[in-house]
Image 1 (cartoon, rainbow, N blue to C red):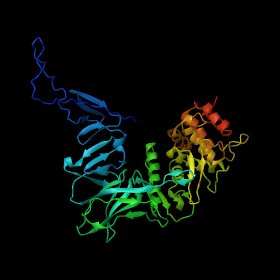
Image 2 (image 1 turned 90 degrees about the horizontal axis):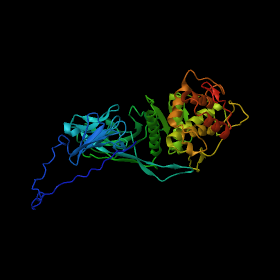
Image 3 (image 1 turned 180 degrees about the horizontal axis):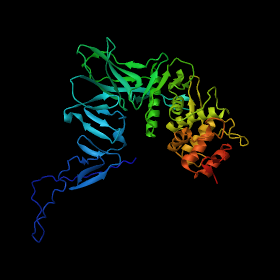
Image 4 (image 1 turned 120 degrees about the horizontal axis):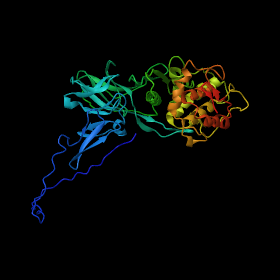
Length: 489
C-alpha cells in the first residue's frame, strides 16, 4: 500500500518599517494581487465528501491529492490516511481522549466532543463510538503482555506487546459484579465508563478473551476458567488511568500469547474473505503436560504447558480448526513424527503446518520445550516420496507442508519456480477441496492429490511445467498430471 505525501512550503511575508520598492522605470504600479482562489479551503485542508481526496491551499492555489487509503482529519489537519493511521486501531476502533478513530471501513477520525458527546464503548458489535454523556465514571489505560519471540531451539527475552482485543472489565471489589466490559484496541488501550457510588471500591481486570464478534476467541485454564489479571482496588472515580501488564513469567503469561495467535489467525481469515468467524476455545495452563492437540467438532484446542509461547504449535493447532470449519480434512488421527504415514494424516498435519507457515512467513516448524525443543526447516530440506510408488503411497507430513509452502512463497526463495501466494492456495482449500466435484484419485479420502487436482481446476494449466518439476523432480512424487482439469502437455 503506497503512502502518498506532499510537502508544502508556505511563504509568509513579514511586515517592516521600510518603504515598498519603487515601481519600474516606466512608472507603472505593481500588479494587483490574484483573486482568492483558495476561498473555502480551511487552513488545515479538507477532505471531500467521499473521503477519497484531500484539498489544501499551496502557494495561493488549491492542490488536490487522491488518497489510496482514505482522507482523515486529525487536529484540524486533513491528510491521506496511510498505514500509520490504522496502526493499533483494530476492528472495534479506538478512543484517544474524546477523539474516535475507526478503520473497519474507510479510515475516519471524529472529534466526539465537537458534537457534545464522549468517546466510549457501545457494545461488542459496534465497538467504540461517539456516545451521549451519562455522567458515569471513566477509567482508561493500556493492557500489555510479554511475548517470548521464538527461534529454532530457544525462546527470546521478553518483549512488551499490546494485548490487542483483550476483554477488560471494571469490577466491584466487594461483590465481583462487572460494572462495565469493553475490548482493548489493537494498541492495548481501552476506555470504560461505569456507574457506581463514589465510595465503591472497584478494580480493572483483563481477561484472556476477545469479545469482538470478528475475533471470537477464548483462552481458558484446564478447569474451564478464563485467565485473569487485575489491578489493585481503588475508589470509583478516584482513578482515571489504570494499566495492566501480564509478565511472561506469570502463570497467565502464555494465555495472552495464545490469544494473540488466535486473533492473528482470525484476522488472516477475514483478510482472505472468510466470514463469519466461528468461535475457538483454547485450553492452556502452565502446569499441564498432556501434549498439544485439536479436538475436532468442538472448536477446542489444547496446548501443552510449555507450548504457551510456541507460536508455530499454536498456529498449527489453529490450522486444524481452520480445516474443520472452513476447508476439509479426513485425518484419521494418531501419532505422527514426520515419517511416511497414511496420506490422509499427512495431508491433515501438513496442511495445518502450512497454515502456520503462511501466517508467520517463516519456513520452520519450531517446538520449544524446557529440555531445549526441536525444529524442522521446510524450505531447503526435502522429505521426498518414492518415485516408483503410486499416488496413494504413504508420505511425510513435512513433504505436504513443503509442497504447499513452495507453491505459496516467492519463486526466488527456493528451488521451485511457482509463485502462487497464500490467496491462491486458500482458493483451492475453500473451493475444489470442499466442492461436490472433488473426486478421489489417491488414497480414499482427502490427501495431497486432491489438492493438486484442485490447483489446476481453480487456476488452469499454466503452471504445468513448474508443477511437474516441483512434484516429480524435487519431491519424487508421481503425481498424474492428467486430472479433472485436463491433461498437462
